[in-house]
Image 1 (cartoon, helix red, strand yellow):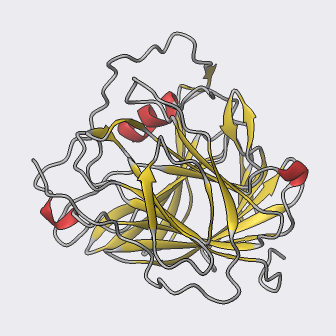
Image 2 (tube, helix red, strand yellow):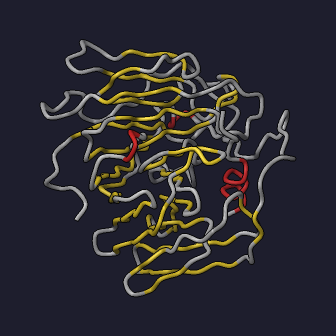
Length: 328
């Protein structure tokens, strides 16, 4: 089992009883003919600490060159009266976490009236912060966290965040209806997923293109991927991902990470997936999910949780081998 991501939850925190609900799946339930079936491996383990990412779903296929990631408001989003975002450190032992010190700072890389990109360096993180981030001719190093913001309804909304030192991403839609904010929850990795104390993607460089609102991820193991903001509204955020090559050494091309102790204390509790030519969706508790071949997968909750109740469900799908739109 990998050591969970306690520092990340601290950084995100710093910067009612509900009926059962059905999951919010992707908008197009009919699979395209060219969609691939990939192998999903479940490396999740039981955990007592509610601030550890013990859920790990790895995605494996040597054929994948494109995929789609969606963060979708849970189906009960309109019923939420209040949310809890404060951490619960019960049963958490932080004494063995690695820590690398740094000088705190904040920098705006790029901004327009509609969008802007901001980087943060915190006093410490579990990995060195040496991955360069490039925007146009400007190159900066030393950031633990980079946020993409946008203006919506005359307010600033943070919609996407990534961590250059270990390659983690989080995404969320715009706040639902009149809600002032919604929480982040599950995170994901794009690229060759390997274990260095924890599951990571080792990045050589990240390049942001303001014109296309896309991020090029250059990997230390070779190759690259592009993550593009496809669309965003008050229901979901859609991210289109393309890869230049297959992953080296048969490594996963992506991973979903989350937290689960019990259904009432979790960021994700259930998995639903569909297979090629399957007659319907299959569902399982995330801890007991045996892994499966799938063309699409949903990770989320049916029951209310005391932790990040408004956090989005995650949907991975549209796995394709077409190389025409691969990274240039």
